[in-house]
Image 1 (cartoon, rainbow, N blue to C red):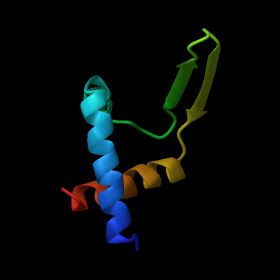
Image 2: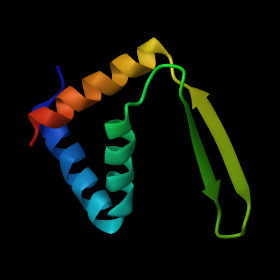
Image 3: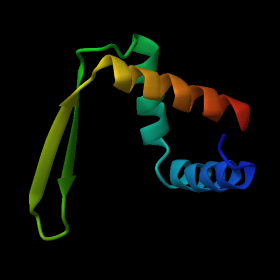
Image 4: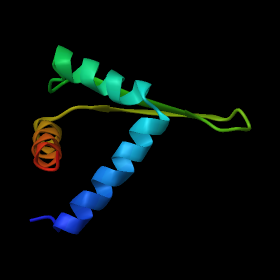
Length: 79
């Protein structure tokens, strides 16, 4: 079981992040609303301030989906 203080700290950090980047939570909600499924590919791209690009992707597995379900449950318990 996760420490309630740690959950509160994560929640506070997420709220600050979401306030700084409001389009990102909207993107996550839209993606989740359309149904993220096993086999989908998530790609992450980072561009440094020098212009260097780093990119990677992951193909979602059943265990990844279990992690997402758990995170959703934990997120729902701190609202």
